[in-house]
Amino acid sequence: MTRHTEAARRLLVLAQRDMTSFRALATHPEVDISASGFFAQQTVEKCLKAIAEYHGIVFRRTHDVDELVDLLLQHRVVMPFPPEQFSHLNPFAVILRYEETPYIKMTLAEMEQLVDLAHQWALSVVGK
Image (tube, rainbow, N blue to C red; front, side, top):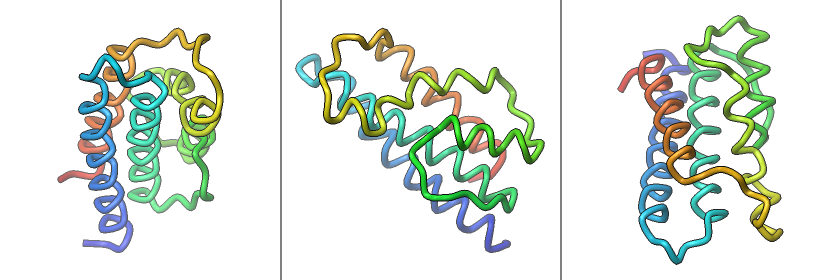
């Protein structure tokens, strides 16, 4: 197993941890959507980083999923879905942890779809 594969698998373990937190928070109606959204964003971010690492793509420390998607596209990594869809999670990385959330138009079900999509894609690329 290569160094890149090992690092990618470690990132997937961290993504799965965040996905578990997302799912747990999403089932409690009293939890603000910004808390659930944070873990949804973190899951997708780590899945994208795992794919980048697997391909040997160097990335900077960032929470910006758009930047990670752009980096993957620049390196000709083919995505099996429209790449811009993860943009909706970007505000949950930092901004919505410190601001009010009344303008959020994303539902928990939509977040779950993005989490599942990113996770399944990362698993198919990196493996278990």
